[in-house]
Length: 112
Image (cartoon, rainbow, N blue to C red; front, side):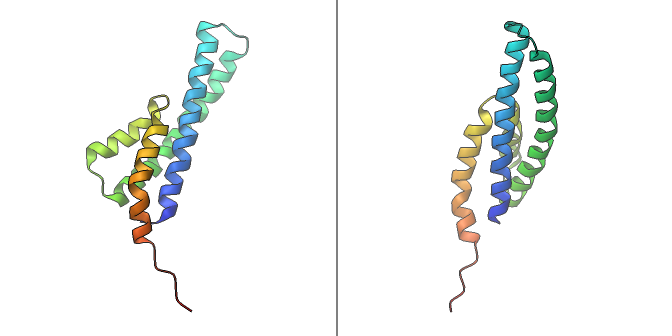
């Protein structure tokens, strides 16, 4: 498995996680604190999170298929982008598991 597959997943996991936390804060501002402009911020962040979550799904599925994960693990990783802060913890666990596999599959440097 290539390192770029893991890197793409990691970037999108962080982006998705940050946007989901930001969306939660915007919704608190809109519904609980009744802050002016929070409705617009909620709309913008929710659209961004929705579209980027789809990209996250594609990259996470690609990673899972190349890592040959069972269906349960794949679903767990895919759903991590829908639970605030879960993407951060799942990304850290998955990265730790796959770093060794990526290093093992990397081609050996050519000798001069």
